[in-house]
Image (tube, rainbow, N blue to C red; front, side, top):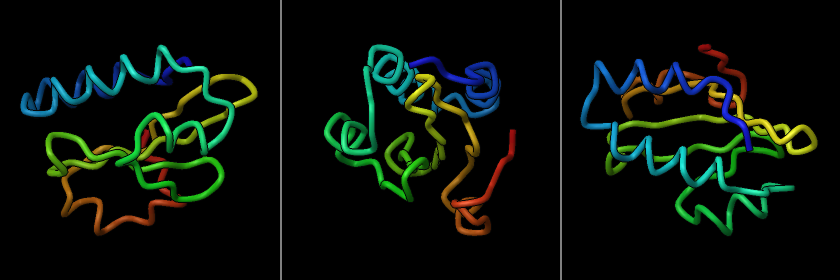
Length: 100
């Protein structure tokens, strides 16, 4: 899958270096994937929380940060919708947020 936009996550990791290793592992997983549904996401990333048919939440840096991604399986795209601390995540609506 292609990640839209990795530059957002890279910039975030520059400010929060503790997220860098987790984000690179996540990027490797997603880029190598052939996901066709949320079931595929669940199998590949069992700790991800499936929010609906297109969005999933991933824990970053041991759960201290949260990443919300919307998937377009037909076009093989992963759209970054939110990254932030656990506390920031608690203040947003994960189903509608579109931070980027």
